Length: 134
Image (cartoon, rainbow, N blue to C red; front, side, top):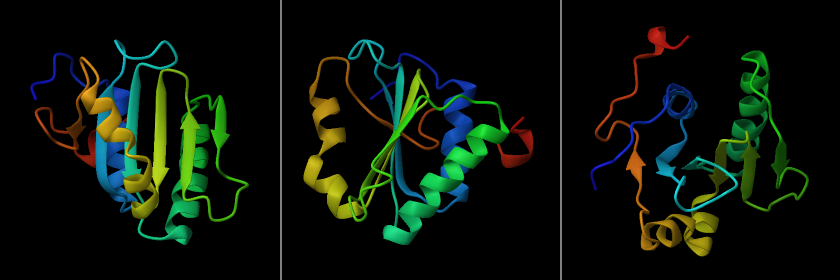
């Protein structure tokens, strides 16, 4: 699917960061026409619960170091929930264990909606190499 809108620099930075943290199956969704709550969403999978906990904690630390405001984080206190949501306002990041991601089928849901669709890391608009990330 051809994207009508380029990924923002913030979305590209997050996608590169997730790749560097060895997150898997990283997808970006342009939700501007689908949601009043956020403009963009990123979905990524962790290899196991320890990796999921690491991704969540490090993402919050990295965002804070960059001055990005985290509005809320869900799923952090529920041991074994397998789904973490980090809400940065115009960007929401969903981190899943693979089996939980399949169970909820969030990306399939968004793809079925009008104007839905996903763009994997590098699809159409490659993310900048790491040294170029401000």
